[in-house]
Image (cartoon, rainbow, N blue to C red; front, side, top):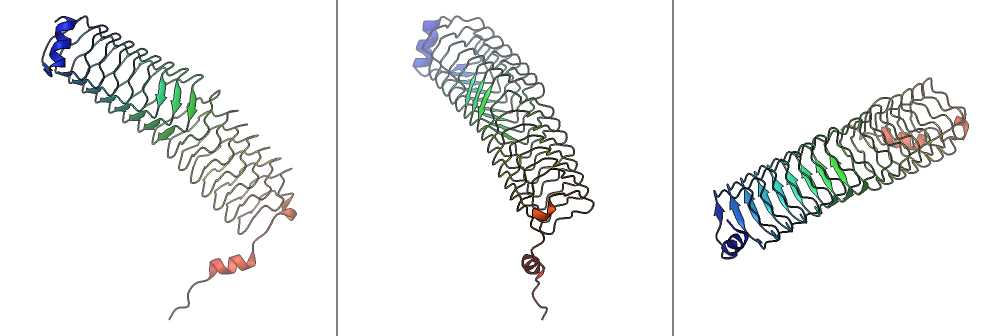
Length: 350
C-alpha cells in the first residue's frame, strides 16, 4: 500500500486489521490517529511520520523505523518491536504495554510522561534519551545503555536493571521502588532528591556524589559504599545490611531511625544532628566523626568504637554502650531519668 493511500484510509477512519505492510514506505506521512490491529509491519519506514495518537495492537514491527517520528500519545500493546528504531522520536505520553523492544534504538528520544509496563527492553539503547516523568513498571531492562540520559521525576518499579549503564546521566527526584540495584555504580551522577525505598543496594557504589534528601528507607545496604557523599537530610530509616561504609560522608540531619547496620563505618563523617534512635550499630566505627547533637536513644552501640569522635550534647538516652569505646562520653547527654520514668509508666491495674 502506498503512503498516500494509507494516509487517506486512516484519515477516513478505516482501521488496518491483519494487513501485511512490511517494508512499506511511509516516511513523512500524516498517519495520526491510525489504528493497526494484528498487522505485519516488518521493516516498515515511518521515519519523520506523524503518528500521533496511533494505536498498534498485537502488531509485528520487527526492524520498523520510527526515527524522528511524532508518536505523541501513541499506544503499542502486545507488539513485537525487536530492533525497532525510535531514535529522536517524540514519544511523549506514549504507552507501551506487554511489548518486546529487545535491541530497540531509543537514543535521544523524548519519553516525557511515557508509560512502559510489563515489557522487555533487553539490550535496548536509551543513550541521551529524555526520561521526564516516565514510568517503567514490571519490565526487563537487562543490559540497557542509558548513558548520557536525563532522568527527571522518573519512576522505576519492580524492574530488572541488571547490567544497565547510565554513565554521565542526570537524575532528579527519580524513584526506584522494589528494584534490585545490587553492585550498581552511581559514581559521577547527581542523585539529589531520588528515592530508593525498599531496594536491594547490596554492594552499590555511591562514593563522592551529591545525593541530598534521598530516601533509602527499608533498603538493603550490605557492603554499600557511601564514602564522601553529600547526603544531608537523607533518610535511612529501617535500612539493613552489614559493613556499609559512610567514611567521610556529609550526613547532617540524616535519619537512621531503627536502621540495622552492624559493623558500619562512619569514620570522619559529619553526623551532626543525625537521628540513630533504636538503631542497631554494634561493632560500628565512628573514629573522628562529628556527632554533635546526634541522638542515639535506645540504640545498640555494643563494641562500637568512637576514638576522636565529637560527642558534644550527643544523646545516649538508654543506649546500650556495653564494651563501646567512648573517650568523649563526658560531653554527651546520658539517660534522662524523667524521660525514662515516663517511658516506663504503665496504667495501674484495676
